[in-house]
Length: 85
Length: 317
Image (cartoon, rainbow over all chains, first blue to last red; front, side, top):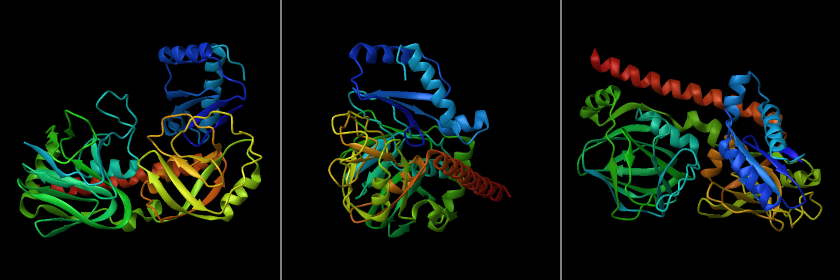
């Protein structure tokens, strides 16, 4: 499940454990990933939480629903590391 | 020359606005009351993300060793220097030897001190009695003119009234952004009850007490790990716990929602016994509120800038 977790976070959550190799892959991809809005990533065994800057998204995209845009970016990011939602 | 922490109070930290990479000596997880942090800097003409001193419950006793322009923002503590009462959200010039003390608090929990030109520390950012803060003295032309203006009265005749901030701080209602899949009955229970702050584990989490919440049927069960994000509302047993900036480990408690950033300023100012009521909302409403809040802060800071420039023009005339 991918959802807006409050106004500054997008979380991917799963009931099955995210393997350590996958966690490492996500971490490494984020380190080299360039984004205008995603600022931080935090992982547990069951979720990946991205922190973003909602006001910056609102201003640059002229929207007051920034989570839709950021969720698309997060979905693409996760697909790039082989995590399907 | 420096700023000396004569008595460190209960918890006094040199703090950043946003979370920063930590090192051995310094843990910078960001200000709990980001509005007060920024306002303290805005008032003294600093960049809004310059380091400030965050003081919780019992503020520090602070001695100044050179003329220093300072503003306090956040909790309404009764401050005093040389028998003169200090107000929050006002600019002051302290002289060499001046010592600022605070007594009782009328309202609020955290006070932020902005110092014109900036401050830093060589050691840990957790300040103890006897520690010194280094003055960065990155003075702008505006700072230099402010020094001239304040030389006569040590303060200006304006500040940001608490009245102007009631929109942000006075209400006890806190929004919770819903998490998909959580039983709507949980939100009904949270909205029906009134909660009070039972305890705050310093900057880590806030324990509430009030009507019981039954989370037995939540979608995210007790064996699923979740990130303890800032403002997360978790129900470990049947009472809500809110995770704060320094919470840094996964939790298996049921996560039922997240308090949006625009309500975290007033959360930071709640102390044991303070009341909280919850209103559970969708993300679209949270973002609409966030944008309105952003516009309000922008206009407040523009007003401060205007007052500062007017003061400088008056001085030139």
